[in-house]
Image (tube, rainbow, N blue to C red; front, side, top):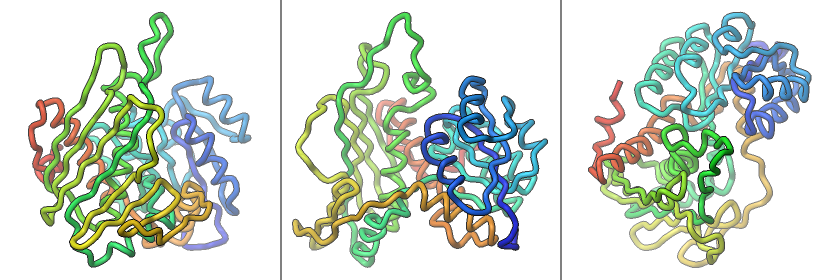
Amino acid sequence: MASTDSKVRIGIYGCGSWANRTHIPNLLQLDGVEIVAVCDSNLESLKSTAEAFDIPKTYSDAHEMVGNENMDALYSVVPAYARTDVEATAAAKGIHIFSEKPQALTMEVAHRIDAAIRGAGVISTVCFRERYRPIFQEARKRLEGQKIVHVRFQSVSGLPAAPSGSQKDSWWSDMDKSGGQALDWGVHATDYSRFMTGLNVDRAQAFYCQRPSYHNPLTSSFNYCFSNGATMTLTFVSAAPSFRAEPWFTVFYEGGHLAVYGYNSIEVNGEMVYQAEEFDPWFEQDRIFVEAVRTSDASLLLNDYHDGLFSLALVLAGWESARRNGECIYVPAFMEKR
């Protein structure tokens, strides 16, 4: 792939909403990209995706696609519960890996994929797309050199869906498959806290408030202890659809604090210091990944699959902590679970 004249041939594993709304349209906007095949076990989604984007080959078995197609990169955008060894098989064949988050539901699976990627030396990334958004890069610059003492993230939304009786519920309604908001946006919030502060987490603890009337938790609260002794709280509340505007992230450091309001603005000690312009981080990450593959330059990317383990493990450790009634989990040991 050293030649800039060669096409980057891509296979898409998963034909859900993110593939159709972001990754496939993004990739088709880029020069020199060819989507050679798509794969999904849902034949209706597979057919509609292939027809919508004029993709020539379809597969219901990802191993068959990886084995049959000549591709440079695999976009793995199936839900985490469906991840087994497709990515590892592709990496072993020299295929570069783009992994949607969360990468897996267990560290065992994530380690197998990571080992195959590192062993083959292929380029990889995890879709922690907001690292590419200028507002988070600005926050990272402003926090550089500060002595972090606490990070707070909070998200408030309305009540989750209740069981629908005779109607078949989606996989998202099954906590054993989805992990709820904590595994969905929680792994994002965890990663962006790592990105902004430059710190990793040593210990994790979590609690969930679950009620039988609802599929997913009404609240989940994570407590982290960073390697420098700083703390973090990560809270999701599904109860109140209307809530006064508060920052998503507040980073406290010795002598002050920095607040990130959604994707919109940054305040330092109550004074607005940054106003964001419109930006599409999905397109930017897709563009940079393709360029990294085309030029064999992994340094263009802001993370790789291995780094992504340090964000995934924290949320999985919290999930395990909640199952153990809030037992504190030592993250470095948890990360080694194979």
